Length: 150
Image (cartoon, rainbow, N blue to C red; front, top):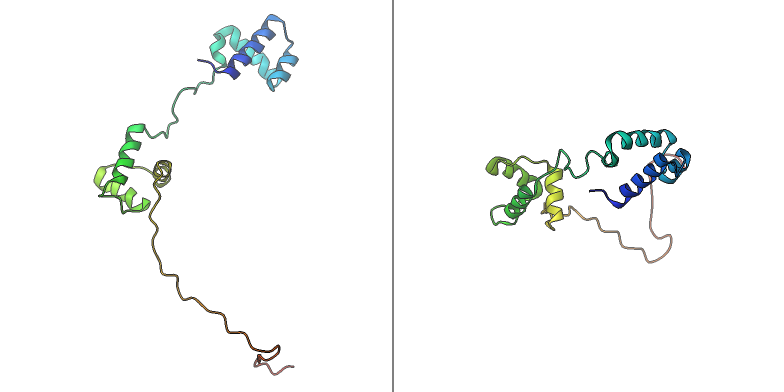
């Protein structure tokens, strides 16, 4: 099934084949080079209008995570067994207990897409330094260094 852009492209290429448009005119309208328009004309003549459609149209990428696995991961994360784990620990537990091997970035994007955020490690803030109290008058604070020079 062709989309609107591909239908328009085929119409322009067919027009160039029929002589309604010159190759230069078709190239300008399509935003392609003359050489590419000539290649497309040859493809349409030899293979038909379907040759304009990209070969990967309608296919999933090689690294696609299927929907069943996505739903399983989301369900497991929402369960009481794994609910307290952060994303890194959850990924390790999936690999150990559930035999699911998935990268951290994929796991993170699946869970964030479902509205689940990773638990953060709570650290104490460390020692907070307070500012010294201001002096009552300008120039009252004594500042000295130990160098022998003026």
